[in-house]
Amino acid sequence: MDVMDRDQTLEFIRRHVKTDMLMKHLFTVEAAMRGYARKHGEDEHRWGIAGLLHDFDWEICPTPESHPTFGADLLRQHGYPEDIVRAVLTHGDHTGIPRQSLMEHTLYAVDELSGFIRAVALVRPSRNLDEVTPQSVRRKMKDKAFARDVNREDIIKGAAELGLDLDAHIAFVVESMKPVAEQIDLRTGTG
Picture 1 (cartoon, one colour):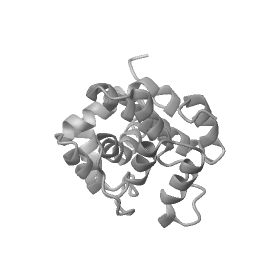
Picture 2 (cartoon, one colour):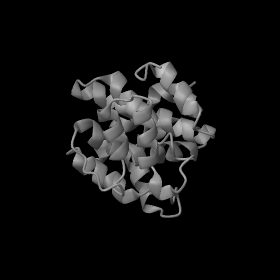
Picture 3 (cartoon, helix red, strand yellow):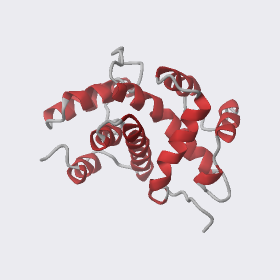
């Protein structure tokens, strides 16, 4: 298996991911990672693979606490590069592994936010990403009942770790998600 081949990585992921909802989350994070890789002149394909893989073990972990360590072990067994494994391991704080690389900081910064942005778009009658603004996202962040499983502090901390204004970060992630809008059950444009 060529672990850096996107199609083969998707085959690997689909052996572990059980729900369409999780696949859409992985595609959303992949799109945001690719956007930031382009912005920083980094390897878009490599960053995209990290985004695709970051939660692949979510549904198969023996316990929630073992995510993503459980998945990281599987990634190593299948030959994924250590920088991608580290990005997966550091996309949450509970592992205790400090984020070091720009890829690691970016994966942390886009994970919760991209899912939250998708949720904001899904509750709009149009389901149109063009209508999602930093202001609409911030407004929904204040509503603790909305997407209650999304950690708002992680969203704020992620932007800070990248040295970005939160509104600029939100706007950038929204734009990065537009190329995959249809794939994640959203729309763009007026059509």
